[in-house]
Amino acid sequence: MTGAVTGTPAGSWTFDDSWRAFAGLEGGLVLGALAEAAHRVTGEHARPGSSVTVRTVQAHFLTSVDTGAAFAVLAHPWRTGGTTSLHLAAEQGGATRVVGQALVGAVPGPVDEQPARPLPDRPDDGEALVLPVDFVPVSQHVELRAVGPGRPLAGGTDPRLAAWLRVREPAAVPDPHLALGLLVDVLPPSLYATATAPAVIPTVELTLHLHGAPPAAGAWLRIEQWTDLVDGYGCVDEAVVHDEAGRVVARARQTRRTARR
Image 1: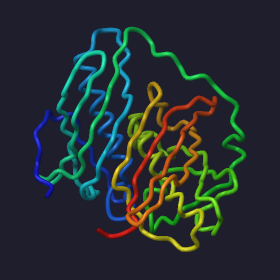
Image 2: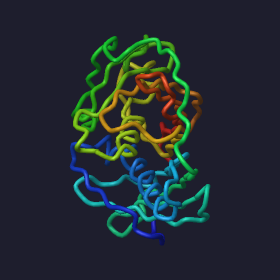
Image 3: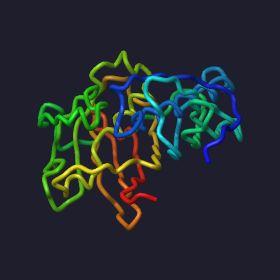
Image 4: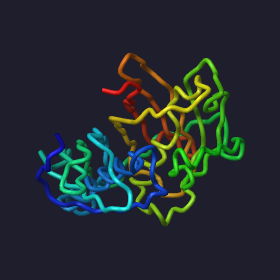
């Protein structure tokens, strides 16, 4: 059942079919919209001069969000203050498509940056990776440069992928939360590194832990993603996201479904 839920409207977004992944809108864009909505609602109640940062946002995908039609995000704060907890929902066509939670922090003054650490490669070291646009149209909006030994559909032994990524047209997703959500979800499932033929392995849950404010849309980010768990239902992918300076931007975990239930 996907009935409507209550909450305060906190934003509306529309993406055309070029932003589709598998059957519907790329889930990372919806997660980014949830994060942006949580940031907006918390910022309205924060003290002047406070740094408001989304710390964690999680989405459960009940059904796909359609492209070509607006979806609205509703937000209900359970608790407000230095730590704000919100219930979130993406609605479209009178039904709840995605539900989620967010934890948002508000502290006086700037938030300390993560320490920078050397990375094993740079964007220019990567190999251009072009995903099949007819299978995942959203890939046309992202520039990918693969690094490390893993490649999709290479039949390797380690379910691990790494790449530098950036949004090709930052103006299309100017909000940094949406841009980050797009990038953490655009790599193929890490199991593709051990496969030789594509398969539909949709995301049913995606959680993002952010370290401070997200980078500006259009920035290069290095994402390393690996499969941490596989069972009869599906798999769990873990990922770590660095910026060009070597700072940890975020960590992500997503549950993917491999068996129809």
